Structures are given as C-alpha cells and as structure tokens.
Length: 315
Image (cartoon, rainbow, N blue to C red; front, top):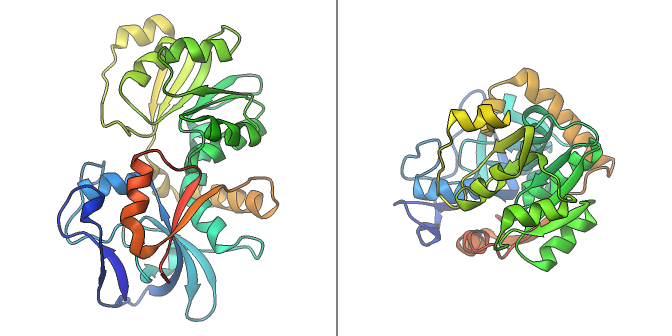
C-alpha cells in the first residue's frame, strides 16, 4: 500500500511517499480502508521528534482517520500514529461509527480538533455566559470549532488570525471581534477589541512573545489554557505573578483525555451529534493528495491555510 513514511527526523522534506507492507491485523484489530487522514500541527512536531511523546523510526505519521471497514462500516479513529496511509489496522474498541449525516471529510476534520476544542472551552477554560475568551489561530481547525463552541456557551469571543481573509472567516463563524495576531502591541490590540477590558480566558497555542502579551491582559480569576507551542519558544512564569493576579495557567494535551473513556465517550457523542445536526460547522481548508503531504506540512507551518487540512490516500 501507499503511505507517507519518515526514515529520519526533520521538517517537511523528510516526508516520503512510498510503498509499505499492508497492515497485518492482530486478533482484536480491524483493517480500515482510509478515506481521509487528518493533518494536525502536532504532526509537524512528530516529524521532528520534538513533541510531547517521543517518536521512533521508521514512522508513518497521522493521528486521525475516517474510512470504511471491509464489512462496510463507516468509522473514524484516533491513532497514536499511522494515519498517513491507504490502510490502517486499529483495535475494534477505538473505532467510532459515524452517523449517516456525517461524511468522511467532516469526520476526519472534526474528530481530534473538535474534541480538543470542547475540552479547551468547557473543561479547561470553564467558560461561563458573559465572559470573554480569546481564541488563538482562530481560523485553523481547532480554532474554527472553538469559536463556535464558545459562542454556544454564551461567551464573547475574540479571534486572533494573521490575515484579513482569515479574520473574515472567523467573523462568519460567530466571533464578536477579531485581532491581527501579528499586531505590534498584541496585548493592547486585544484590550481594544474588548472595550478596554481585560480578558477572562485565552486558548493559547503559539508560545513566545504572544504568551507574555496575553498574560499581561488576563483578568483576575482569568484562565490561560496552553495547548501548543507552535513557535517552539517556551516561557516560564513566576508563582508570585499568579498569586498577585489570581490567574491560572492550565495545560492541555489530548492524550490525557483519550485515557479517560468516562469523559471521552460522552464528548464524542455530543460532538458528532452537533455536526450531524448542523450546529457545528467543520471548516475544510484543503484536501491534498497523500502524495503531497509534504506540501500540506509546508503550508501549515507557513500559516498559508485556514480550517482543517486533510489527505486523500487514493491520490
């Protein structure tokens, strides 16, 4: 079968479109014929082996797929790796059967980032009606869903995005205001968008100077939820500054949610029900041929994309 395989760690250039052996399923596994593979920023970390989970070579990246089993079941699956391929053997217990109203694009685009967005807004930020939340990378896969979920929770939503085209997309999803994520004084731009007031919660994934700017405008009893370090620039924060401002800094890694079936099951049910009912719009940025995974990673890293990026293993 065709797959993307990594033989050495590095940037997009190490993604090789190649032929590999078909999966050999274990007794408890089922082979899924992949229709769509989701592309996530975490995949770019995995290719460099600088993510939270250590990777081993050779590696087929990809943490989520949608597809069909040989007996005709339409499913979505969250994986540790292996999704950038025509076929994947997965444990039966990990397969999520899709509602008829949810297509393969929506399933692969909405699953991982939809669960992330739900956890960020509800479990981590614990947003309440009337509070203000700022969503970084609001035009991306997670961001577009987080904007909608936060609005459904009754929050005032401010989206950060790097171009006017992206900001227009975010406004169309219900954001109350948008800010240029590359503003010279990001903190001041955010306060201006919030009528001069501080902000109750941030969904933060960039790291670096943006973290410092956002902490500076976080309100007392505010929550900074960190779910990525896209710039690869980490920050440290003093406990005294947290005490003085009654501020919270909360980290989130989806792997810990996946280890909690008591939390995961209801969230998956709610997520796909909302997508099936049209209450959540899954924004598809582009569907790339599997053979062009390198270009997908390049576009994602360069911030040339909006919405969720997918791979089509049939091409």
